[in-house]
Amino acid sequence: MTTGPLSSRQLANMQRLFATPFAEIYPLYVTKVQRKNRSESELRTVLSWLTGLDGRQLDLAISSGESLQEFF
Image (cartoon, rainbow, N blue to C red; front, side, top):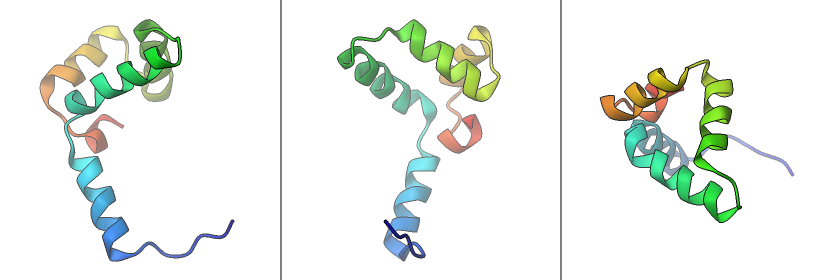
């Protein structure tokens, strides 16, 4: 598989995704992990590992309205 430069449409889609509030994406993550027979607790553990945020900080990130880009 080879990858080349992103098209302007791909770049626009990425910018739109990263501008989306994390609070809108988090429930989608929860639904996906539950479909895979995993728990929200496991999701939070992975997100904490990826970001270095503890549970309280994760809750604050969800409620603050920060974008996905700001979250990561």
